[in-house]
Length: 306
Image 1 (cartoon, rainbow, N blue to C red):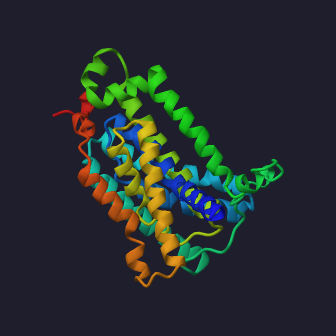
Image 2: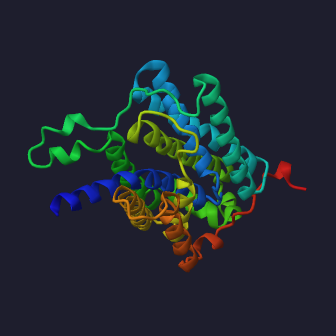
Image 3: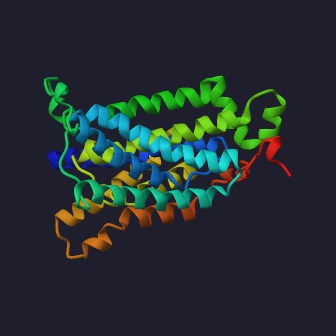
């Protein structure tokens, strides 16, 4: 029984990591007043670029760097469209999802002649922790990215509440005109926030491809970016609440895997929808209105105002 519980907890934590990382990034974007429905596109771009980097160099850590840059590239496009040119944020995000999905599919088939890439060097386990007495056999089962995620969470908690830049980002989301009047560069903060979002979503994608697996598959994000958006909305853009909701999604994801393994007689395709049904239900029941209070409309520079 104890082994079953430990296995379930490990599964929950491992499966929650991509949602946690992406939701932390999305939190920055939303706090600065830029909705990010393109998180899935940033993740899939990061997943592909991470495998590409590992494939070219044979070094998974360089692959992670490639993944971060891949997600940041999609984030930069979203930032350019929404912040610089005042495009419709939701349309931009959804469009980038389709663009990134199409591009990664195209390049995967072009480079590897398949919808699945060859196996590459990965970092699925933390071998350096296996000698720790008592718990080493548990700690070793997590990717190093899991421990990076813990550090990122602590940094995010400190940054958004204890630093001047974090507080300014938050103010920009509520009243950019007031912040601009105080002499703060509103557009710079918005750009930075979206780029942070893209880089963290790229890291999340890298975790999926070379942290959990050692290959890239088309559509491997499976809508986790949208779960991250839901977590941010329900968590009222507060890191601790977002973490809790991401762990709940991780539980439902682990549950659907266990149901498939135990062969309960339900179609696998139906079981796989459990985390997303939970996400939709949670969002429908949520009464959080903080995001609505933020000014998600474009705030253009004077040279673009008509």
